[in-house]
Length: 256
Image 1 (spheres, rainbow, N blue to C red):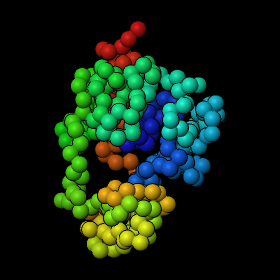
Image 2 (image 1 turned 90 degrees about the vertical axis):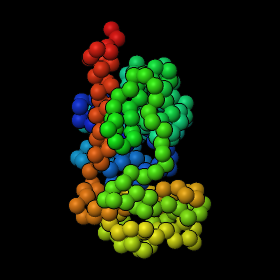
Image 3 (image 1 turned 180 degrees about the vertical axis):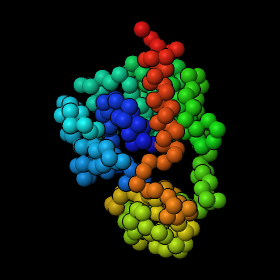
């Protein structure tokens, strides 16, 4: 979701600074700028992101037409870089420390934020009629914990860690998977596919995971899915973020 937002804002002419964990938790890694944490550089739909070590290096990447990414789990970047807009795309179902005074406009994605209190706007992330809707009061709907139905399947298409341990993958994102195939393992415990389809996402090898954590995603629609482009959900949410920015600085909610 964060990469989808960054991509849309970048294409709309904004300069983006992307912050990440030292060990990213991304599942749809082919369309996640977080891949450049380990690779140094990554391209999503023709837009490149480059890992930087200091915020002061960001302008060099902006001038080259890219998105700088800095590993900053503690949010220290704000000590030397005050953005006009801050988007909290952690999707932790709770506010992990974001404050409404950290930028001219602060946007929270999904539940855990209250518009007008700890952020200016909340963007709905739950699939359905309100997906991508901008809220200027209240909070997004609570997470149900149930995966969205795609191709008639919900929980069956999700790959989860059978135990707590270190994940190791056996297949690659973009491969066709059959029900019962071994997709990876956590320690000595095998992770098997519970449905057939296209392997759309898989966490990075060596990632520590806890029992029950989502480690992969199979799309039962198979080869018709373009796993190298951001999802319809990410596009809807990113559209909401762009709307919130325009409302704040250009529209009826503008603060002069």
